[in-house]
Length: 106
Image (cartoon, rainbow, N blue to C red):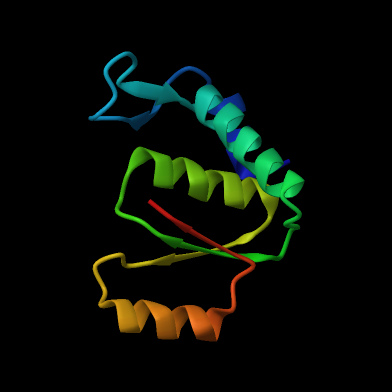
């Protein structure tokens, strides 16, 4: 069992993620995070990615970025978060070295 599903079993509807910018539901429970992470993992699999693939993320810290990280973890993929504030040349050279299967940005 993956740790996200295990957390959902242990903590259920307890708040796992607070979303400041969200109007309807300012929190997501562990169960909701697990479901969202599974959806993200499934989407990544459908796009052709597999466990062990590297996915670079160039994004500010947002609730969506956290859910993406959970989805990558659930899928067994390698998350490579990069500081979006780095100069473009540094991000580009890092991406060249990483050679990720996918690059996600905001």
